Image (cartoon, rainbow, N blue to C red; front, side, top):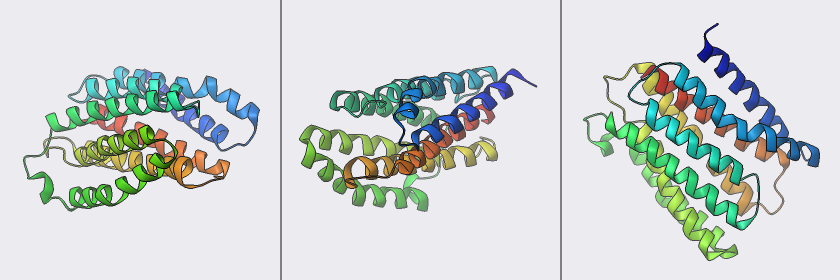
Length: 223
């Protein structure tokens, strides 16, 4: 078995374990995540690096490094770690966007129905989420507005890769961008909309998040 395959399997095992722990209401499970969650992105990045270099390797590994910072910060529900985590993930999305746009399709961006749909979704949902977050903390409202723009930009860019990229890589990148958008939408629902969210919702956040990062990593290795 290749080194990259072993590391991918290790990541998938860690992702499943951390997702299960995140869906538990047990304080012990939450403490265990201080071990499992910080391991996710380093293991995934190591699998990407072991798979050989492509045009997307560097931006994806940089994004995963930012994801590591965000993962650790968001183990806390406190205010300051929220800003640190949001900023880290926003920088990660910027790295994804840079990588995808460097290998973008030459067709007009807004000719794509996917792009138009995501732009409309952002225009409708982002102000609502920002207002809800701002009711608790105006600074959080501004952070949510800025972050949602970076996230949607990444989701759009992930679906606009050049036809010269392998079809499987393009499909994986597009799915990864949508999965990331789904994950953070669920996170916003848990954090800013529901007053008493069920523990299973955090499990859904982590399942879609770890899946998104894996899909984007796979896209990088196949590009």
